[in-house]
Image 1: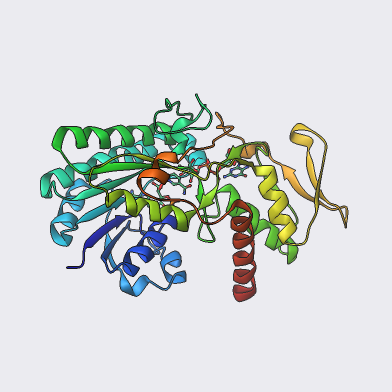
Image 2: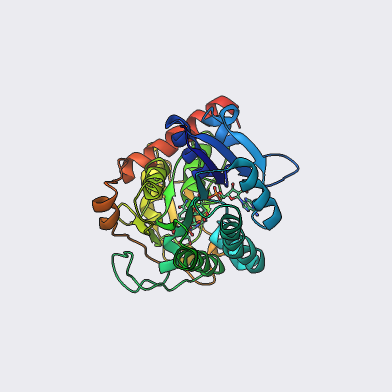
Length: 342
Ligand code: NAP
Ligand code: G4F
């Protein structure tokens, strides 16, 4: 019989890709979205799956709402992808971030405990929990050192998931996913901000890109590859947590250079610190400027993961390389620009 799944955060990047994967596998998919005055379905529309998903208004902050949802949908698997997921905003809205990203997980675990402890649950943990890294590369046994209210909230979500697994024998596990991007990435995250700007500058719709810390390094993978690992984790015989990463770190600076190259610009860097600028070699125009407003009160300078456990036990590996990812995102933004002309 076809399995049933309930995904929180269906309107987000991972929710859209995971729903597509599970529909292809024959699942009946319920997707939870929070109430907004204008629903935010552009990702599942872009993947042409909106009509195949049963959409439900569900908020992680409302425990009764979650209990009723599980009672009505009777899922075999629940994927908790919903969160206040933007690190920068978590410094401005630390309480909201804690309520959604930390306590929201307990609300959902409680719903599973009350409705049916046979439901398998996936929790979206994050490499941000490694923060000020204690070991290079980071793996499942690396000590955590969170550097933002977001990361602290995710760490709570991580440990409460382990606690419900150990206390109530619930099949609950976490994926500690390193940064993963795609054409469906939110515009506020640095990669999509860069690819969108490269295309806008190319088409004369923007003058330059204002950016924060150029030298932060991340282990960037493709979201389509990462949601495969998420599904694989819930198909195991016993619940276990896994690091998911490519094992390569690249700087924001490198991401800019490659993205702008795909848009036809060769960036040369001049100056230092906040006065550093990225200049188009051909025209001499300043295309990149530093704006300290994008610096974080506490920064995560470097993340690079070791996903050996997932590669051995799940048989997972990433398929899209860093260069392919950058190219894919620029091309998709170019296409969008041509289609919408905005
Ligand atoms: P995303 O695009 O920002 O999506 C987050 C989702 O959470 C959106 O659907 C959002 O709804 C929903 N949401 C926010 N508050 C909610 C609430 N109170 N109740 C119900 N839904 C709520 O994030 P993503 O990149 O897909 O990431 C998925 C999950 O993985 C997140 O938990 C994130 O923290 C975690 N993660 C992401 C990465 C990454 O690199 N992408 C890495 C590690 C972990 P709206 O559309 O209405 O805002
Ligand atoms: O793209 P970012 O905002 O992603 P960040 O903070 O690494 O968080 C993302 O990945 C986490 C996994 O490690 C997820 F858990 C989380 O939900 C989210 O998906 O920033 C990446 C880096 C940072 O060091 C930031 O300071 O880029 C730097 N950066 C430099 N200039 C910028 C900018 N980030 C943004 N968003 N905007 C800038 O202008």
